Image 1 (tube, rainbow, N blue to C red):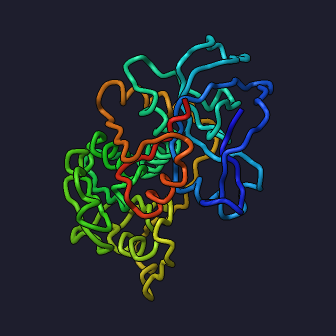
Image 2 (cartoon, rainbow, N blue to C red):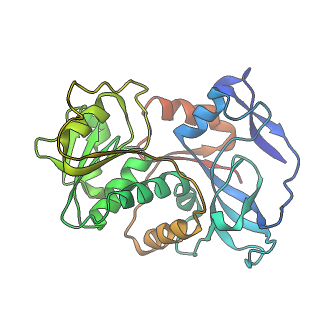
Length: 300
């Protein structure tokens, strides 16, 4: 079986290598991978040392069940999963991290959902009810950002989408953005919830745009820049800055997302797609902010 493994000597710190066929542990099933999607977190794993040399990268996967274990799914069932080591021909994953994909949903689209879709869904839930509220999404053209804009809009919020350049703003109004900002400056009118994917000056502007009682959820730091808050900006009416990471079972969230994709309520935009062997090209496009939405790797 071939997979993308960490190798600090290779371009983008990964290489295709032959690895052992996965064996399902109790509570797991084995999935034959058809598509996997690439996230900034995967690139950071390859370079940061969080994933040791020789380990398989990846988190987002869609494919068909090969060995069902005790999952109750039949062999051949189409599924989407959040799985460590997703950039491989086969992957073992816990049943509580998997959702069935109906025929109406393309597997390549399903592969884009686990990390970005679940993050957007859970981050929005941290802000409470969305109906009639104002939501700011920074880095709105990326994977998490586009899902967040759409989900917030479906939830009844007025959505302000923030991006780094005019080119990145394209199509966000069609996804559900009521207002689009270019650059780190926040909106003139205060917001109730901020989902920040960028960090640095975007986080600072988002914090300053928060209304009393509002919440800023820090999802990522795509800018790599420090967020320096002005003196006394944390003094005043109650506001919350909340850290975030995807953790725990995601099967229920994946079922919700797949159902929304199947109904047409949640569009999935794939901005880059190619074979697993083109990982380096996909990584450079993602790092260079040249991907609107998700980057998907075709494994078979």
